[in-house]
Length: 288
Image 1 (cartoon, rainbow, N blue to C red):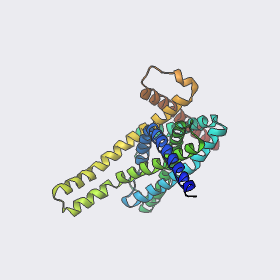
Image 2: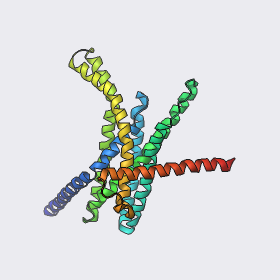
Image 3: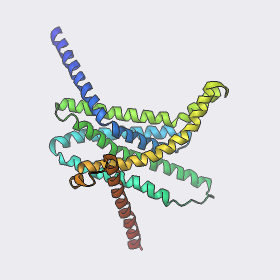
Image 4: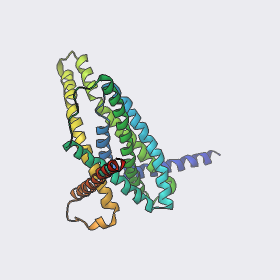
């Protein structure tokens, strides 16, 4: 009895060692997409009132966990029964990311200032709607980026047993969510931490200087993340097209991979934005 029990423990220990090794390899391969995921989600999780930052971030984090719960089993099943579906889903997700990234650029250059005299009630309603819309957009974007993370992690353990595949992909999915949104939470609360340091030190000494640095750095970091997040959307989408669309394998192959992927993402994004704008105008004409 005792020897059988210890044999089971030994098997479990060996399995955990195997999963630790495969998870480490998978994490290295997904490092690039995790960096893009951080930039995109940090940009989407900022821009709210201080009192709403953590509730909004928690709502997005819960949505991210739900995304992983949906994606991981579906990816494993599709990889076993219908592998080609993985590529189709990736390309469709790439279309969405390309559209969202380029749409931000187009909106920035074509932005029109809103009227300054707006009733307070209307502003509150707009803020509530904007918050819900931003949470929804962040969860959708997280869903697509999560697909990419899960597929890359799965691709790194295709030669392993099914149990190791399941445990490795699940571990990477959990670590991705906890790691990304943990760092995002630190970023969005930098200013509060800075104010507390300044208050605790009586605005004197090194602690006060650190607090001021945190407070003044946050707006700069948010602006940088906004730009990096937009570029990341285009790059991730371009990478999806470059690796999963057959005829693109030999297009612009002399360019560095990062520039090549950016060009693909930008081109597809511009085309999708044009199609959406044209479709909306056509629909408006038909309604009239």
